[in-house]
Image 1 (cartoon, one colour):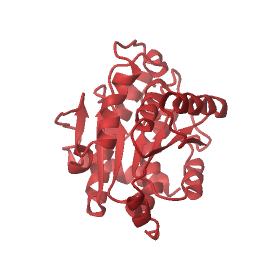
Image 2: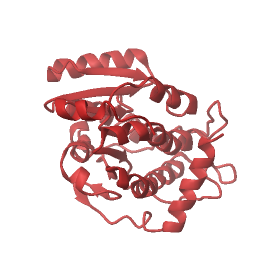
Image 3: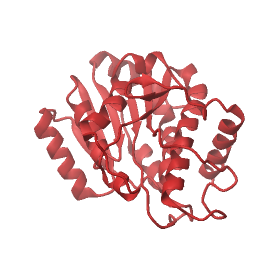
Length: 276
């Protein structure tokens, strides 16, 4: 565990530091902008494309007047890049918002040989939480918000990478979002003693590249989609409760998270990937 030497000064300054992944996408950028509009906020966007990241930062600063907005580049499907991001981080982190996701229409693999959706949408969340755990503990009370979905189900613990099943991006996406909800429960149990709340949410039905890749549109604006993640990252409810799942700012019972055996099995599988 890292030293918490910076924790007290960060708390006394009143500045809240937020890290948002997938922050050049429709929902991610809206989350980052809404957070930047909060008083005494510092927002770090995690992106893959430097040009898009620079444009997003400029847009958010212009819209909010908050100069404390910057970006970090990282491909969250790659373990080494996540570790590098965590290693170069300095100072506190009060809220990690895991939002980055992909839905390639054909089965793809990362440089580690891991199926892309599982690597990004599931292991990306797991590895980021694991990599930033000490920083969050030193900054506590802190929060983790996992952007999941109500479009979830079909998880097969024996075939997480679709090596046996025929790959279908919709099925792989639904599986990944079920896994995100389950991992939220797993990490909540482990991090709550350190005053870190972990919650999951459905962001809303937004017309985005991701929804289009799944063959859907969307009837909500990016700002509407960002409301619940931002609420969990900033409202007292996001610290008062942990291990919960929310849709439209309302708690919904998550049957996936209640299956303790499956939750623990998924956590162990992800842990094994992360020590490779």
